Image (tube, rainbow, N blue to C red; front, side, top):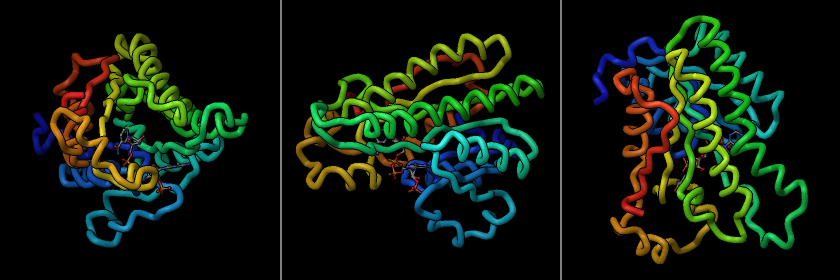
Length: 248
Ligand SMILES: NC(=O)c1ccc[n+]([C@@H]2O[C@H](COP(=O)([O-])OP(=O)(O)OC[C@H]3O[C@@H](n4cnc5c(N)ncnc54)[C@H](OP(=O)(O)O)[C@@H]3O)[C@@H](O)[C@H]2O)c1
């Protein structure tokens, strides 16, 4: 599906580029000749110094995406560097508050919604505007979660709720985008082998046994599907949720 040349020269912004899935996605895109903006917040990507290709074909963009101002500045910085945008991967995300729902305060709720729902919305809106104004038939991929299907637990209500709303937003915005030739799809992930779960759960073995495939997904598998959804060969695919969950 991913022809080696199909990303050559395409300008793609990937948020959460310092994380497991972001890193695999950035590497795949760079190896196919894309120009890649790598968003990060607390952790400067440790792979930045590994490859000289990065210095010419990629740029680092630091922002806390819980802030609308920083999110918009990151986008403007990317446009200044790349000259435009052909693809956006709304990948940054986290379970910021793990608390019994009875104990949540307003700040707890705002944190999860700001990062996992509002930031992808601000960025998608800016990207769509730029693509529309410049007649670019671009693509957006939103990374969501199996928690949108199962609801997560009552300790993670607003993470799951944000991811579920992000799927709905994907569908709504595709109605606007499709006539313009702009595509927006979501990739719903099951359990993947990144630091995400390691931060929150000590022993994942019980959770893995619940997955029909009896294993975690590899970040490279997620990256392949992100590229499939970005790829212009998927031109007829819009407003869809693709599940990559090992059968869950
Ligand atoms: N791994 C899984 O099993 C799984 C399952 C379902 C969905 N997902 C989703 O997949 C996406 C990627 O996750 P991952 O597994 O690669 O996790 P990860 O390794 O923890 O990476 C998370 C990324 O999000 C960035 N991020 C977190 N808070 C941020 C903030 N306030 N501002 C800007 N960036 C921020 C992190 O940047 P810094 O480290 O630089 O702060 C990091 O690059 C997320 O949206 C996650 O919800 C993952």
